[in-house]
Every structure is written in C-alpha cells, then in structure tokens.
Amino acid sequence: MLGVSSDTYPPWRVDVAVLFGEELARRGHRIDWILQSEDACSSAYVATWGGGSVWVGPTDLGTSRMRRVRKHCLGILHDMKLFSRLGSGDYDFITVKDKFIAGGFAALAARWFRKRFVYWLSYPFPEASLLGARDGTARYPILYWIRGGIFSFLLYRIILPAADHIFVQSEQMRRDINGKGIPLTKMTAVPMGIRLASFVIPEPPERYVIPAGERSILYLGTLTRARRLAFLVQVLAAVKQEVPDVKLYVVGSGDDPRDEQEVIAEAIRLGVKESLVMVGRLPQQAALRYVLDADVCLSPFFPTPILNSTSPTKLIEYMAMGKAVVANDHPEQRLVIEQSGGGFCVPYDADAFAGAVLSLLRSPELARTMGERGRQYATAHRDYGSIADAVERELLSVAQRRRETAR
View 1 (cartoon, rainbow, N blue to C red):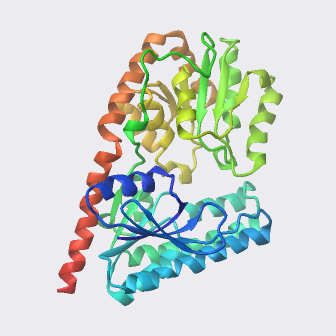
View 2 (view 1 turned 30 degrees about the horizontal axis):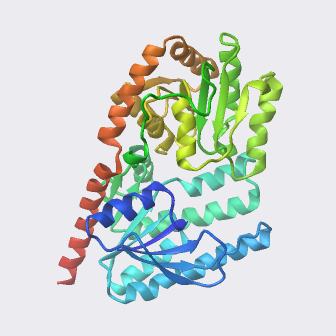
View 3 (view 1 turned 90 degrees about the vertical axis):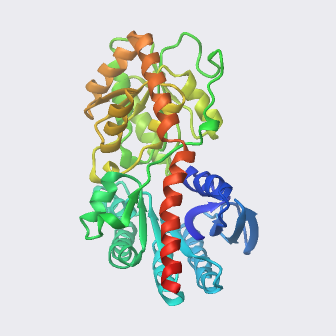
C-alpha cells in the first residue's frame, strides 16, 4: 500500500501510528507513506518507518499567514510525489487519509495507472470549515468558507465517487455520507481504538498528580471552540453547589490561545476559577496519569451534526483506564455506554451532567464497578489488534479485486 495522510512524520495519531505502523505492518504488509515533516525541515528525505519507506516532505513552521500558506503549498507539492510512486508499479492500491487536494490527485493517478484507490475520512472537515465560517468560531472566516466549499466539492463530487472503498469514523458518518449519494456497501465504519498495552493500571492505584483525598472531575482532549467547552465549567459550578471542594482538571489545549481563554473566562464569570486546573497538553502517559487519579471523567460533545459523526477517543481512553464516565447523548457515546455499562449517558445539559457526577462522587463503589465494566469493554472491542483484523479484511479485498481486474 502507498499511503498519503494529513498526519505528519513521525505519525503520532493512533489510527496511523498503531493501526498501520504497528498492527498491519506486523502482519507482513508492506506500507509506504508520503508525509510532511512535523519538525523544521527544508528539504525532502526518505526514512524507514513501520516496516516501509516514508518520503518525508519539507515544511515551514512559521506562524504568520504567509508562512502558513507556504507550509500548505509545500505539502501539496510533496503530495504530488504519489504520481511517480504509484507509477512505479510497486503497489496494489493507494490510501489517502483526510487530505482533499491529494485525494483528487490520487483519484486521477489511480485511474491513470490502473490501481485501486481507498479513502479514509476521520472527520467531516468540509462541514466543520463551513460551520466555523458561519458561527464565528473560525480564526479566518472567509478563508474557512472558501476552504470548506472547495473541500466539499472535491470530497463529494470527485474523491468519494472515485474511491474503490471508503473508511469512515462511525456508523453515523457512514449514514451521513450515504445521504450524499455514496452507497453504504462502499463504506466501512472504523471507530477509534487504543493500544491496550499503553493503558496500564498500576497496583495499588495510588494518586500521584492529583492530591489524595481531593474529589476531582476531569476532561481530556482538545479545547477547540467548536466544542463549546465552557460547558465544562458550568458542570463544575453545578457540582460545587453540593461538593464545594471539588476540582475540575482540564488536560489538553486548543489550536488558538482564545480557546483556553474562553474556558477560563467562564470560570471567572461563574466564580469557580479557584476550582479549575488548566493542565495543558501533555504526552500520553503523563495525561493518562491524570485520568487514573480522577474520580469521574467527562466526555461532552456539543450536539451538532458535525460532532455527531465523530468517534470519541477520550471515551475509550477513560474506560481503558478503568474510570467511570459521564457522557452526553451522542450516537457513538450512547452506543458504547449502553453496550459497556461503563458510565452514564445524559442529555447535553449542565445540571444533568452534574447530577450524574454527584451520583458517582457519592458512591465510589458504583464508580469503581462502572470503571471495571468500561475497561472490560475497551479490552474486548477497541484494542487496535481486533480493529486491525477488520481493516485488513477490507484492504485485502480491495487488493484482490485489483489483481482480478489486472488479469
């Protein structure tokens, strides 16, 4: 397989780093990649990763608007390497993940060189850009509107109709894309998973980063404004009415400093600033240490059609660490909570969240039982070893169809 992804090199997101770089590579598949460098890099080079080769492209880490445009232009030029690589004849198919201009290139190259084309969509990026332009959450509304329109045209008019198979993030996304005219039989839903070996619960599970005896609730994840995470502070304020000494730990950051400022401003407005701990972004193991120490973990998803199609990683990460979860009524979260019994699924309402949190804070045994159920579910259904089995079956089917066509 030749892969092109929005992930940079070296990849760190688990759906590339673990699913492809570890699980599928371990099964003996040769997977090469075309990726842009994460670190400052002025010229392209070739690296070895995940049992294959990676053509690493240059980048520009400047923060000005012109430097950001230059970075994207460098990425587009580097993605064009897929024509020469696919033309070499070494691959059964090409997979593009979350790139739209490169997806258009790949659709053209696959037809030209008679290769199969697989597309992987992990998030409704065109719709998110258009929504950000409309509701004012985008940093550059006009640019987001232009980008959303172009990406929407490329995705639904060119890329997905041309793809031989499509991987999406959830059953809800599969249904949403079907509404755009793409057959359900052409798509496979692959939810987010975990590398279970990274989610070790020490014995005894003593607290290390949250003070012993302190009652705490926690959110782990991005703080982008589209997620409206001032809601977390509203939950905190409601819980504090019954448990005055509770603390809210927020582990993560946004793409824009204003993302975090909105959360802090809401805490000041509600008079709970002293109970809000903004931890910031941490390496995975350090972040999981906070999850392990917390009493209750929160997974709120602002109810929009865009976020409804996502597959929340944080929910499974909480469960893998044996923590009880309070989540709102979101298609995949509802399904996971119902199947696992690992927490409460409530309406997207601060008082409803607070009520569920208080139930768990007042009953540590209930929280422990739900946490154990959640870990059993994550172990059985969301380890990337089992997810890789399903992905491998689909990719082998695509490769087999290509060989039969060649004959």
